[in-house]
Image: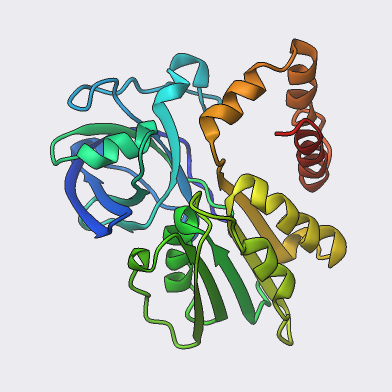
Amino acid sequence: MRSVAMQVFRATVVEVHDLSPAMRRVVLGGPGLAGFETTDIGDEYVRLLFPEHPDGEPVLPAVVDGNLDYGSIDLDRLRTYTVRDHDPDAGTVTIDVVVHEGGVAAGWARQARPGQVVGINSPTGMYDPPATATWQLLVADYAALPAALRIVEATPYLRTRLVAEVADETHRLPLPVHPDLEVTWLTGGNGASPSCLDDVVRAAGRPDGEGYVWVAGESKTLRGVRKHLRRELGLPATAYKSVGYWIEDAERWRERYAALDDATRASLEGIWASGRDEEEIVDEYDERLTALGL
């Protein structure tokens, strides 16, 4: 996968419009975004840093040893989003935001207008199919749909099945042109009702040839998906990517996590510093969270 050097940019809102009753498109640009590079990976993500007041200036973090210095900012003002589009000629980055009640990002997006400023960092991608793959299965809820659609756009050479779960039929988005695309729309999930994504992945057939499964959505729902792909099907890490994009009732989840005793929190955080294989680390972390009711 291609990577780019970490930088932080001061981006100005240049355009805002609604794609559906629940998805708002925000186009960022301006001179402060000069030098932004894309990884060209379909699900590349950035951190958006929001000002305390909508018309104010965001506090931008320093970059230390190629990484954001999270200790220099208010983490409550930071959220992660995928890049829907990058136009180097226009110098713009497009972010599609699910709008809902509550939340720093959704609240900002509902009132966003040209001239307002946010911080944005260099992107990182996760989608990484084998070079020899001939097909892909993309499964996404609404928060992950912008990334899934960009992947579709970027892979006209792959036979693609896309399963998209939306809370309401009016939330469907236009599909990119693709020479070999099969699409299934599901209504549900997304915090409005139980998600079917786990069932979809378990029921999905595997076409002939080498393929890649990319699944993204609510984090707890995807624990079962990942367990099925990794343990029950025995797929190698190179054959799938399962990405938690959000946590249902996140505020309550954060409260419960913060209420854990210091030793338990330190143990959970220490899992990531163990130096083991990343997939083994995620296995243990998911199991620990599940055991703790998180």
